[in-house]
Amino acid sequence: MKFELDAINIEDGVRASALARRVIGAAPRDVMVSYVADGRQAARPLEGATDAFGGGKRRMVIMRRRAPFLMACPAGSAEFACCGYLVLTLASNCPMDCGYCFLQEYLADNPGFQVYANYADAFDELERLRRKAPARGLRVGTGELADSLAFDSLTGISRDLVEYFAGRDDLTLELKTKTDEIENLVAIDPKGRTLVSWTLSPERVYRSTEHRTAAPAARIEAARRVLAAGYRVAFHLDPIIAYAGAERDYLELIDQLFEAIAPERIAFISMGGLRMTSALRAIARRRFPDDPMLVGEEVLGPDGRYRTFTPLRLKLYAALSDRIRKSNAKPQTYLCMESASVHRQVFGEAAAPPTVVGARLAGD
Ligand code: SF4
Image 1 (cartoon, rainbow, N blue to C red):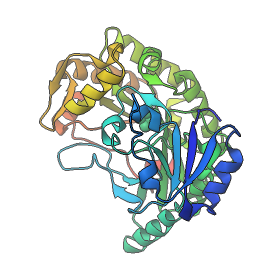
Image 2: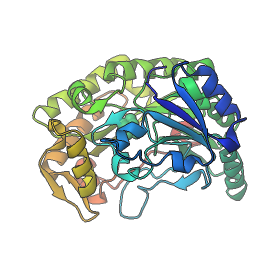
Image 3: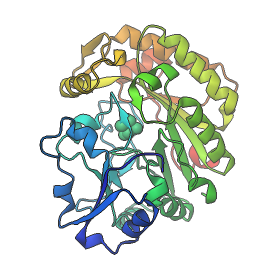
């Protein structure tokens, strides 16, 4: 196991679930396992803790999900020119601890690391959706409220997911991660239906801000291995942080990526600037007061988020998209959570989110 846990709380109603049995079987013996009547209570912040959110990351709560598993991508709206896929919520919170992570605000009242034992219900929801929209390719991501692969060595959920999607030509699964937990993946044939994407940052951002994640080189190596195992791969340069020397570091990162993985094998690359609500900014600066990445020049946007000063953002986007464009294969590139006008200034054309199942993502 690559992350440490202090405790595992299992909701009484899911004691006998396959997930609970798998986790208990794989967890180190010194991790305390206890049973609780209601996982929602166990996921609440611990009273008196100095960093209740950080503590929640070390407490796994295996419970039944009461809400639907499938949701529309929260970034998908007419206002933003972004990718807009469906989100499948299989877990909530993450054992890693990135200084900019929006979960610090979003999960402040429920920081326990929840994993949903009834995740097979998600397959029923997907089947209902497929019946409603037959022959329409759907792209489904699991990395919204949790990293898709963190603790996969304990939960093994990726095996069931990849196998489900492997049998359905009209669906694509997108797993999104900052880990190198790929041993379950490389043991299964995804039959071209699963894309694994890594968020990449330069070494300086990783060292200063992305606590307990895999190093950028390890993420790229994990991507190379899953590609060889039959998965498609994509990358998110997000959040891009405009510190002194950022342009040189991000360009080197692109070069490092293209040296390891031929650009024509990359399904897409997304880019997005650092963005934080004022509440998130306050929490992040309180939890990580010495992190220089969290104190850049920012302006408040109409959506209530602070973003890096626009000319700095545009300059970085332009330099990166230019470097990507110069690669022989020009992987599809798009911006996430940026307006159509920013997209036009960077690419000189209207926003173009990645093509979904049945076209590029299914065929390359
Ligand atoms: S890996 Fe992702 S989900 Fe986990 S702390 Fe970092 S940004 Fe948040």
